Amino acid sequence: MKKYLSIAATVVAALVLGLVGSAPANAATTYTVSVTVTNTSGTGLSDQYVSLSATDDSYNYYYGTTNASGRVAIANVLPGTYDAQVSVYTNSTSHTATASVTVTTANAAVQLKVSGVTVLAGTVKAGSSAVKDADVSFAGTGSSKNYAYATTDASGRYSTSYVTPGTYTAVVYAYNSGYLTTYSGNTVRGPDAKTVTVKSGLTTTTNISLVRGATVTGKVVDSKGHALKGISIYASNTNRAGYAYATTDAKGAYVLKGLATGPVQVGASRTKSGVTVSGAVKVSAKQGATKKAATIKLKAAGSAKVTGKITTSGSKVVTQGVTLLSSKKAYVATARPSKSGKVTFAGLKAGTYTVVVDGTNIAKKVTVKSGKTKSFGTIKRGKLTTIKGVVKTSGKKAAAGAYVYLVDSYGTTAGSAQVNSKGRYTIKGLISGKYTVWASPNGTKDYAVSAKITVKRGKNVAKNLNLAKGSTVTGYVKHGSRGVEGVAVYVGGGYAVTDSRGKYTVVGVAPGKNVVSVSDPYVGGYHNASKKVTVKKGKTLSVSTIKVS
Image (cartoon, rainbow, N blue to C red; front, side, top):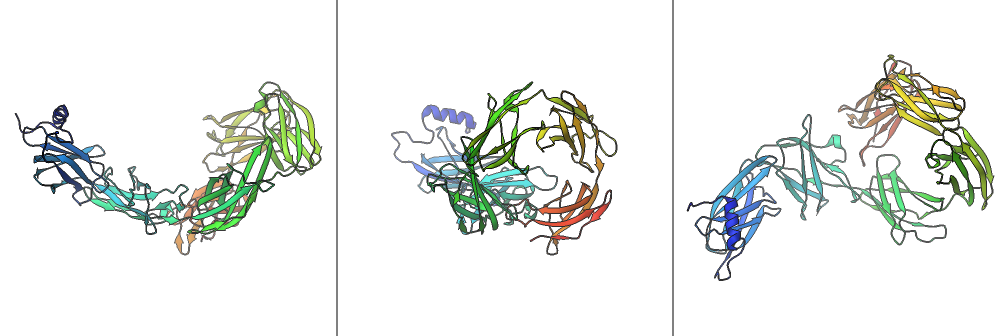
């Protein structure tokens, strides 16, 4: 018989004889063999299948899987000489290492050093504490589309051999953990991440120390002071990126984690039986600390109720939106009719309101007293008609991908559509009266335009629109003397992101008085900033440097 069998054949034979991983009942002595698997840099390789195969004709075969340190203790091994073997798979490549070990004492040990295995390793900590089960993601930089992933163990260590040599940035995403998403180099901003160069066959170490976030606690009660369970809480920083969500427990308490330092708005609301109750408080948060917010008391705006019925022709009533406006034509609430057409707005202050059937120019006024219910009666909506047309760029070409919006004289939406490749759009949603139709470009140098139209009941409308050539606004965003990369800049309907020098160029800007608004999308990053400007039609405006802190 040959000295070596294939691993597969050996496993089958061993299973038949009952020798896998255990000794026969009459064996006098068995031992534990310690196997360490590393790459050529000496880094332990976790989750690797290690086998011990007898070199004689005994068919003895044992196996185990390495831990996070690359070690495995294989127990109940009979005395003898074995081939220890491991095959490490990295992406689509297999790397094998074999070594001989003679088992005659309780101290048998062998090391398998696998060549050609590239490893990313390191630790994730929060202060001096190890972070368990943190997901570490690596993304290739430049034109590289390579990725790698790992998860930390109880000691905060991670390692992965499923990585291709190249240059990466690393990130640990924080989800309601009390910490902020942190990139390699221990920064909260992706553009500022330190790059990691991974060399073939070697181990590259990257340690990440998570940046602490701010925590806000509080309580939600009803108008009588009773704790409210299951209320959704939302919070956001008001002068920079930062947001958190939570749900109240049986005591009405909530904990919001992962906010940035600075002022925070905390809000809560609940709708029950047609009545919406809400409340909000402000609190000053500080990263690395916990702040207690004032108790949020949910209450309705008032005790009045407006109700009525909507009927529709040509479409289901449940698809028709209904909006309630205040006496000053300000938005109050939106509702959808039931299958029977019933609409109810509850929890209102006493006063006069306008009930608008969205996008139809059909409305009714109703005045209601505190604690009372007032009906607006029945509003009948006829069949909807259609507006269609062609949208062209300022260069007289089809404005493919542009968006068209239609609103009635009350500002409620009649419908929207996206322009096709030939520049055509169609919106069904009109009844009669005066409307405004808007056309907004999709990534071109033009800016949005609008037109007034008058619709006769039962008549379709055709309206073509030509987008207007926009202006250009350019400038720099800096922190001190250094350009800030990766912040969003908005002005006059246009948008851009700063480059590595902090420079931005926004095209398709509407002329006139505008505001250049700067917003960093990274939580815990720079504060918002803005600058007022006046843009001339068809011209390029160079804005003085905007400083962020």
